[in-house]
Length: 454
Image 1 (tube, rainbow, N blue to C red):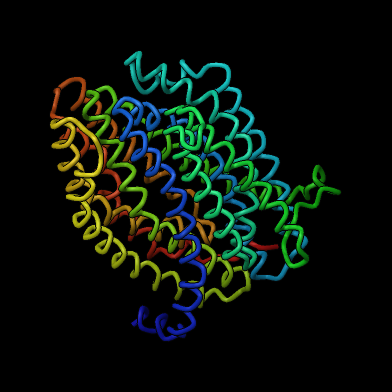
Image 2: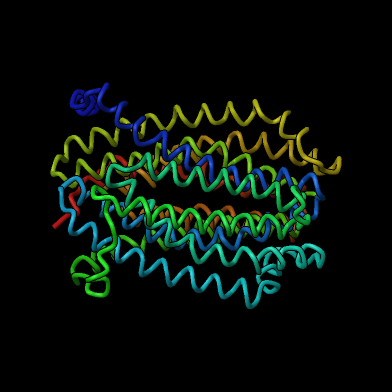
């Protein structure tokens, strides 16, 4: 009865209109970003398996950086969506300032790591000297792009929560298209440019990130957009800063648990063997491409729920959350079907050894089951629960399901029991599927139905 009462609050036409308006541009943006990794894998896969594998391992450094950036921008999006729903533009500018300060520090640290100790970073993921040399040369160039990424992500986040999601998605998509085109030029050496292989992919990424940030700054100068308030950049209200940190720390804990955990999966597969690492690299690209749909709906869910809660409409926010949680299962089964449908095409597209090709086929089948959990958890946890400020649960669930179950099993299977690469890969997929019941129990406690504004 309660579910039917909540459902009755919703204007279905308005709900799907708002969801489509927000989710499609964000999903497109996510798809375009994933396309860069896909482009790198396909183009470098045409050059040599080692080039493709080394770059895939090297980009795990930016993946970890993104975990910190996601925590900062995630906290900004949670508070920003609620204050935008309340109509408080001044506070949203202060939130922008806080995001830029934290993201700038993180970006500088990762830039210095890539420039000063790239070989040490590559040793985390592989002991193969050939892969370390290629990956280090990639990081020395790509490290410059990490300086700009943190700042541009702050601009794009503020655009999402302030009803400028389409321009933000357009900027990001244009930068990605430029990245893919420059990839072809610099990797293969087109139009008289010398072929740079892995270093070419890094140079293309850096140039496109610079242009992306320039476009963000230029567009945000328009009157209806939110800009950083540089006149009070270092004078953020203490209470707002405290609220931001209260949201950011659990998000950062969850992001690091997830990001370092995922990086550990890559490192484990990298040490299982070169063929397993190559197959895992391709499977990861496919996973990221197909997850774009649930990423878009998850981000939209946080904005929709946050707007309603920040405006004081708690019943409507709760009703939207229930609707979005139910929708996440539909997206999950669609994603499962997509993985299975594209498997034959993906296996034929890249240059792999026969053994790596066999591993890839098995990984795609395992991944198809994983996608159900990934979609449900992305929309429910990262969208609905986070939209209401219930950010601690994600960290708890990751500690238990990923760090106490999936990672130990994968380590034991790979280095003690010497399981096949497919069995080890299956262990790395346990966490998302295994925590669905726990997520549903947390959701139904409705601790996420709260107004965070002051």
